[in-house]
Length: 133
Image (cartoon, rainbow, N blue to C red; front, side, top):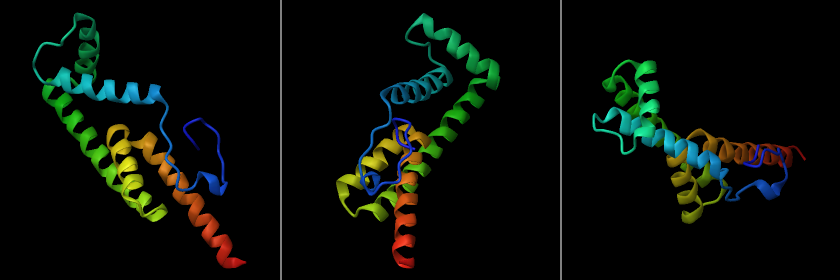
């Protein structure tokens, strides 16, 4: 499924750079930032962010657990970025293509990884069809 929400199996979708929707960028980056800021022990930069910190503390009980959640999410994004680099290198062996997918997935995690995985799945499906013909 592409970032626009349509599923396509054409070869035009394989090996393409696709951006995740800007709203997804904003939500994930803001969520990671607020999780880090809420767990840092420092006051938040704006009082209107306090309810978000309170929600995080309600869900995870302490700042140290919230900090652990942030670091686990960070490590998950790093792992997903490594997977994206692997998938991208199988699609096109070009440094800029691989770097794009690695960087975007490091920032956004699964929404980006899902797109590159779908491209790889389509490529493998087409390769299997070509071998059977």
